[in-house]
Length: 287
Image (cartoon, rainbow, N blue to C red; front, side, top):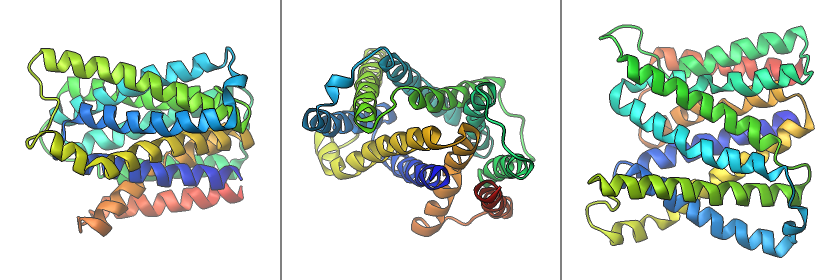
């Protein structure tokens, strides 16, 4: 069950990243974050009211608040890094956030077998290569590398925090709702600050473009929510080390989606990375 839910997480995150990437080509990135998360809040609020999840409020929800604060900050650092450095460097480095939940899992007592340790190494290498790292070319700005590592730490921290935010299914609904409300507040504050500095909140074409993009924005927001939920279940069902690595295969999904939908050609190193990620997945699932 751990492998199944973790792989579902990678699928959902990969598709959400792909959809978000397409949207940011015509809508400001911060607006994509805020609107998609706001739509997720509306859906989750209805679920929380319908299931009576409010009754499970407790101190563990601070983990959800922490995830809600860290998530948008990590995403902003990631977008800034993409603006400064080549995607072929930034994207693979961003996937290194898996180190955070894996380290947490080892600290709390997870002890994968030798086959699973091998699977972790192979899968992480595959994820890094699937991003298509640029091995030649101009030096990358130090700021871009630093921002990418900050983003990676943030992404990994969100995985670790959301896994601790609940112990039941209804409690998970409430935790995800609290996380998304915090996302909207933090992202909204960042968007307001950006506009005050002269940034754009609306794309060319104004609100009409936002209205037309609402279905895609809703998909991105809800896929991200679902991914957080399936990851929390995966981390609770089995070793966090296994769940975290399998859930971090999402860059492979994003690359394959770009290949299938946008007809982007996979570089040889990306194809090799996808293959290694698959081998690592098999080792983790059967070890």
